[in-house]
Length: 153
Ligand code: B12
Image (tube, rainbow, N blue to C red; front, side, top):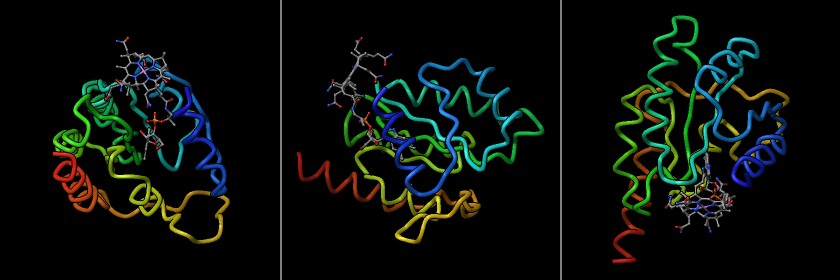
C-alpha cells in the first residue's frame, strides 16, 4: 500500500526506525506489537474513508490497556469519504484518545511538526512529541481544510 510505503520513507528519511505492520492489521496484533517494540509513536494511516470508524475502535482498545494508555498514537490520511469535510472527524478521534489527527487535505507539515521533524537535522530516534491536548496543529489543519472547502465550493 503506497500510503504505508510513503509514510515509512518519510519517517526513515528523518532517521526514524520503522516497523511497518502492513495493511488491515487486526487490533490485537497491533497491541501485541506495541508491547513488544514499545515504539516512540504508533502511526496509523487510512485511505478508503473508514479510518474514522476503525481508528476510534482501535484507540479505545489501546487506551483501555493500562500499559499502553500513554503510548503516543496518531492517525492520518483520508479519514472519511467527504474530502475537505473530513475535518469533522478530527475532534471525535482526538477525544477518543489520539495524540494527533492529520486529515490528508491538511498536508504533512503538521505531522512533521508533531514529530519534531520540521526542517531540523535527522535524529536517530524520534523525539517525544508535544503534550496530547490540544492536538498539535489541529486548529491549523482545520482552518487549512476549511479554506480549501470554501475555495472548492
Ligand atoms: C491504489 C488505490 C487502490 C488500491 C489500493 C488501496 C489501498 N488501500 O492502498 C485498491 C485497488 C486495492 C483500492 C481499493 C479500494 N479503494 Co482505492 N484508491 C487507490 C488510489 C488510486 C491511490 C491510493 C494511493 O496509494 N495513493 C498514494 C498515497 C501515497 O496517497 P494517500 O493514500 O492519499 O496518502 C496521502 C495522504 O492521504 C497522507 N496520508 C495517508 N496516510 C497518512 C497517515 C498519516 C499519519 C499522515 C500524517 C498522512 C497520511 O499522506 C499521503 C501523501 O500525501 C486512490 C485515488 C487517489 N488518487 O488517491 C483510490 C481511493 C483511495 N480508493 C477509494 C476507494 C473508495 C476504494 C475502495 C473502498 C473501493 C471499493 N468500493 O472496494 C477499495 C478499498 C480497499 C481497501 N481495503 O483499502 C477512494 C477513497 C475515497 C475517500 N476516502 O475519499 C479513493 C480516494 C478513490 C476515489 N477518489 O474515490 N484502491
